[in-house]
Image (cartoon, helix red, strand yellow):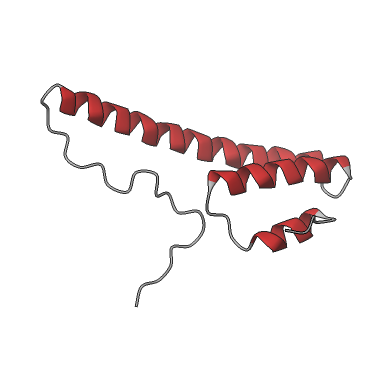
Length: 96
């Protein structure tokens, strides 16, 4: 992949955000864009709040999985944990 000269070019090269690695790349490129004065500190602050929300959601999913495993080990039935780690970022694809 060719190095992007601007944040906009970098994001345009991504196509979609589907993984935690994609989010980390956005953060790194955004910090570089801040240093280049392409974006403001307010933009980075808003992005940080969104990433904090995603991080909290991931941590909640991990706690649910740990609890389910612990309860199964003790013989309790919690049911199936469905779609763990499948949080959709963006719009879900339409079937059909």
